[in-house]
Structure formats: C-alpha cells, structure tokens
Amino acid sequence: MAKRKTAADELHKTIIEAILDKKGKDPISLDLRKLKDAPAEFFIIAHGDSTTQVRAIFDNVVEETTKAGFKPFRAESSKGSEWMIADYGYIFVHLFYREKRDFYALEELWSDAVETKYE
Image (tube, rainbow, N blue to C red; front, side, top):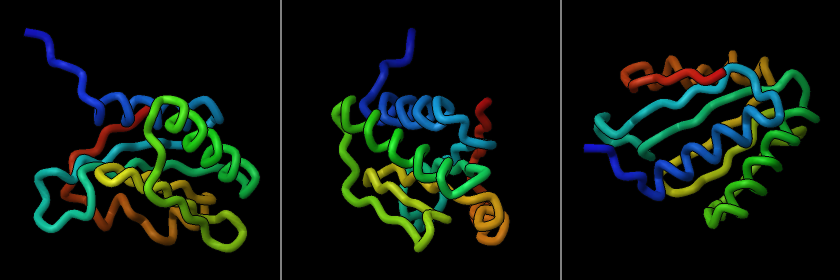
C-alpha cells in the first residue's frame, strides 16, 4: 500500500526544493521524532557561501512555503544574515553562512537524529 502524503510531507518537500532552487549548500534533514525532549519533529539545515545567498535562500523558503499554504509562525535572523531560522511548528529551518554552520554544528548537537542528505 502506498504511503499517504501528509501536510508535513508537503511542507518538508517544499522547503527542500526552495533551498535547492537557490543553490543552498549541503542541505540535510534531521528527523528528531524519536528523540526525547526534541523541540521539533525535523530540523532542516543548509548554508550559503555569502550572507546575500543565505538571505536569498531564506526569502525563497518563506515565499515558496507561503505560496503552498504554510506560513511560518516565526522567522528570525541574526545580525548580518549569518543564521536565519523559519519556525513552522514541527519543522525548523536553519540557514547559515558557512562559518556559522561549522561553529554551531547542529548536526553534531543532534547526532542521534536520523539524517537525510539532499543534492
């Protein structure tokens, strides 16, 4: 029997496509659902080579998800667009400038999560 698509599946797919559309680097999805006290079901993480690219990726994620009917509850950025977050409740999108991604190392912090890479 084929798996039924849920709203979460559609949102997840839309976010990944929006990141790839703006050439986001090394996008991954961390499935946090089996972890105790996780703040969300998924973290989606990617980076850009410049703060301009990070902003473009972020803007595209918000635009495409909103068009698909998923407006973020909250969208925030650090000074200089080095780390931007879109909070969809059960999915958090973290977009970084390369050096900030390396510094915060969310993939290592949540290393118990199931990781899926995208190209």
